[in-house]
Amino acid sequence: MTTKDRAPALGADGWFTTGDDPHLIGSRCDACGTYAFPKRSGWCPSPACRGTELIDTPLSRRGRIWSYTDAQYQPPAPFVCPPDAFEPFAIAAVELEAEGLVVLGQLVPGVGVNDVKVGDEVELAIGVLFADDTREHLVWQWRPTGGTR
Amino acid sequence: MSTDDVVVLGAGMHPWGKWGRNFVEYGLAAARTALDDAGVEWSDIDFVSGSSTMRNGYPGYVAGATFAQALGWTGCRVASSYAACASGATAIEAARMRILAGRSDVALVVGADTTPKGFLAPNAGDRPDDPDWLRFRLGGITNPSYFALYARRRMDVFGDTDEDFAAVKVKNARHGLGNPNARYRAETSVEEVLASPMVANPLRLLEICATSDGGAALVLCSADYARSHGVIDPVRVAAVSTVTPTYPNTIIEMPNLATDSSAVATAPERPFKASIAHAAYEEAGVGPEDLDVAEVYDLSCALELDWYEDIGLCAPGDAAKLIRNGDTMIGGRIPVNPSGGLACFGEAVPAQAIAQVCEVTWQLRGQAAGRQVDGAKVGITANQGLFGHGSSVLLVR
Ligand SMILES: [Zn+2]
Image 1 (cartoon, each protein chain N blue to C red):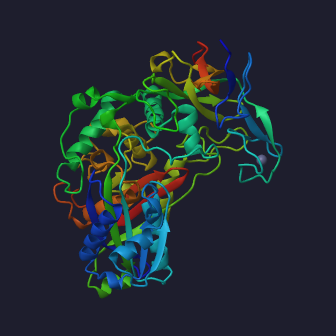
Image 2 (cartoon, chains in turn yellow, red):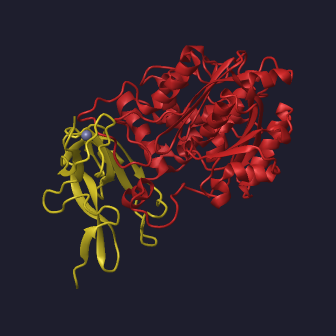
Image 3 (cartoon, rainbow over the protein chains, first blue to last red):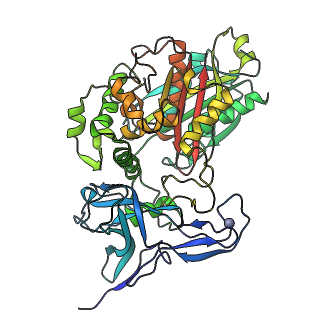
């Protein structure tokens, strides 16, 4: 059996690191210090800043759940799902305190809406969004750490 | 009535439904109804303002010209506006500004749509630079996902319940019973709503608005033009708010995957949705305490409760008390969505903000048979378009 390639899903190239302690990669304005995710280039998103140097920067691995939901029905394309293989999944919006960002993402498989509450701590994980014959398409996910507020 | 007022001379709609016909047909029917209501000939209209649709090919993008051609070319000025759910308000504002500038006397605003079944999905093709494509591809995050995030946060932070959300549907279903333009006209119960299938926890099928076909139109004119037509006490457009968010926008918003950062810049005094109505109140010189009626964008039942707070009917966190007390029922302190709202209409994107203004116009004229808010003199509409388009119209009689 051959091992499939693993690579970020189309659109998420350069958005996260993999390995034991994965991070999302955002950008930080060199002039004012504000953050953005997905990362930006060219100009700072703050109207009070004329910065043009936006530097790739790893974001906090841990955050707290701002809110959460799930998808009980298969979303439409461009969501990719093998025929008849749809499994409901959960989604969380996660507050990263240091960056002042709330970032959406799926919760890791097996974690549902009954397993989390607003304020719970989660950490970043890298999972498989979908796989085809040759490749696993990777995406960031959130995994509860067991910490509550 | 001051000479620099813009007034609503006519309002008209094509009933909402799933008719499966060309959107131009609905727009044309709504336009003719509005022109008849105004007592104005199409040939007298000097500006046509189209609210565009993205799901009907090129004729939808250039909606203003499409409707002008369908009504018969007259050489009048034209504009077409796209601002997602806020398209109608943007088209209204284009007409209002021409009238206020003295460049037009009487304008026609039209929006209509034919929509597919099910979830609204992005346009076809791989577009990894488009946030609307990315959220579906990377997260399977649909429009109901965002509505559900707001709903769940209400439950965990404010203690709202499933029954509170269902009660909004029950109220709106009752309001819409007598509305001839509504698509769904049937009473429902909290039990029936809660028994419908879960779509995006905590929201169930009957708590999320459908997509519909429909058309709505307005004839707007100057105060002088109305007077010359013998209309002395018309509904006036006291404000149109088309504001954008203020950085940093710290509430996660469709179709984005993240908020702006509040690490350096302080979050604005009002979140985006609250700033939409606030700008309308400021422009009109009235406040939420002056309102008699409101039409808000109940894409989900829980989102209607968010709007209660965002248009200033109560403090943040208190909206569920209003629905529990019956305050927002017709006959209550401040009726919301007497038309039946999106719960009874389903969403016809480019027509919806115009339809909200049609309803408030009929309410202020005392013509909302079967759903009339007694003595209504001041009304507001509120909604929000994808990517940061505010939409609120304040009407006074
Ligand atoms: Zn900056």
